[in-house]
Image (cartoon, rainbow, N blue to C red; front, side):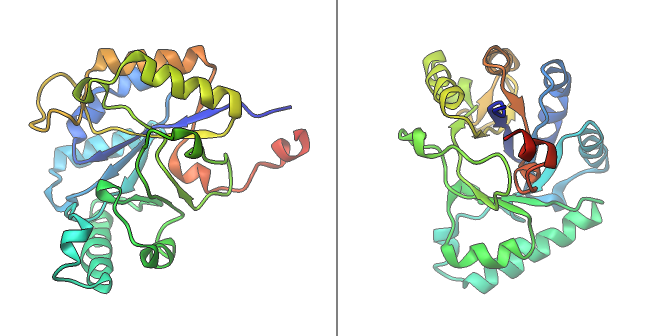
Length: 237
């Protein structure tokens, strides 16, 4: 028996209020989502409660560096060791102060260096590396046992003016070939984010979720991709 294809929906940065506002929409479609948080020291007590609420709903809170630096620019004046100390370990200290223990990580701007993978895998179960490209066919991820994944498509439909065909093409390929499509989004809502391209209205997000349901996709969080294949699934295969 084959395993249904799945989406791993991820949202980046620090848009906690908008993420929590979309929680009923995720619940409606049975979507469990991974939120990659940066700037943890800016989180207010209220936002901390919202993050805990999302986690209690079955969503995952991952990590997205302490201050969302552009890695190439950062390395002009700092070393990779500085990056791990400042952007990873110091940021994780802030996450722990919030009561969060992230198991997954994503690089801001999809910028990484291969030498960072090993030290980060000592701190996290799984890493999201590269961003979505036109040749999306090479970006599907296996369902279990992953430790690094690439991004299959954006969900910033409104801000990036993505067409329905953009999602239909990628979802059809995912349905035919199986595996997991990891998505990347940011702000959820029509207004409230100064970065216009990093936005998806709730109506457009619901369209994406409804299409995923039409394709009978399951939903998975990032850390679940790093887990071993369940014994029952192994026997079925």
